[in-house]
Image 1 (cartoon, rainbow, N blue to C red):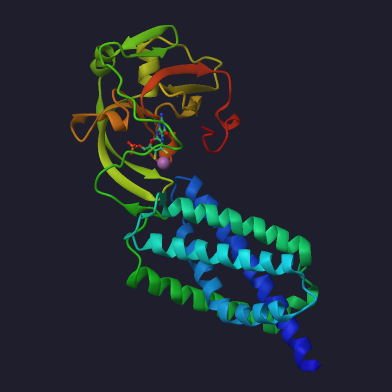
Image 2: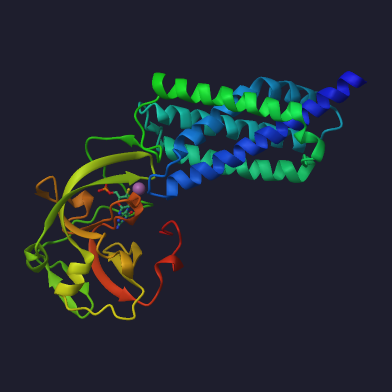
Length: 336
Ligand SMILES: Nc1nc2c(c(=O)[nH]1)N[C@H]1C(S)=C(S)[C@@H](COP(=O)(O)O)O[C@H]1N2
Ligand SMILES: [Mo]
């Protein structure tokens, strides 16, 4: 009786620790994949450490699971849910670790990152259902000295495992988790098809002015390097030639007084809003690596927004319009 009771206590704590690790993994994953700036904390290392800590706890969880599945009074639904959660967590951790090696990008038609994010969402849904079914609620007594000591040991173990993985197995990653690529890849956020716009008839509408390509390429261009970091898990540093949006607006004599943002829209309808205060740091680009943009990369003109993730880098730009909508009033991720 005493032994069983202690085993149950152990199970509770393993579950609490796993729940905590999944939460840390989800938060660091979303943050690393949304935010384009380098923080003093290397988010992706914390993300990896949470994943490795989950694996370190696996032997203990295995004991708990075997006991749970053997119990008759647990319904088939609960068991199926537990197995689904296990499956999603293993796929999430496995695809993440595989991605960090930089050797594999696709599994069938899907990118590893699509599988990673999809499985993570599945895991969080299963976890929520699992919790509603038989939630382990933290109790005061869970945080006794021994439990905290074990948590510290687990943290140290995860730290060592992360350092070993990083030096021995993983490739060089950015703080976002993205792996390097020499060349850009043609990528769409969702399902935009590559546009082959005719340079003779292309115009970019800027306020009341419809600028043609000769006008845009005639604006004084600057050359600069910037890293495109796609949420599908790769990045590439390139040299770009372009004009700051503030300069484009000035050349078209478009007043920004009282406006909160500019809406940059693509021939495909894809659009992002850039805050009025950021227009010196967002570029309308017509060349990369000393050549005009390729069709796949947004010819004849695209956005380059250094420090922001790839989904801000609108391709095939056809309008740049001052807007009274604040930039924060758009969805964090594009919706189409
Ligand atoms: N019009 C349009 N622009 C777009 C996208 C898109 O789907 N449609 N995808 C964005 C995303 S998610 C990325 S990562 C970059 C990819 O640029 P590349 O194809 O030149 O590598 O373009 C961005 N610009
Ligand atoms: Mo992307």
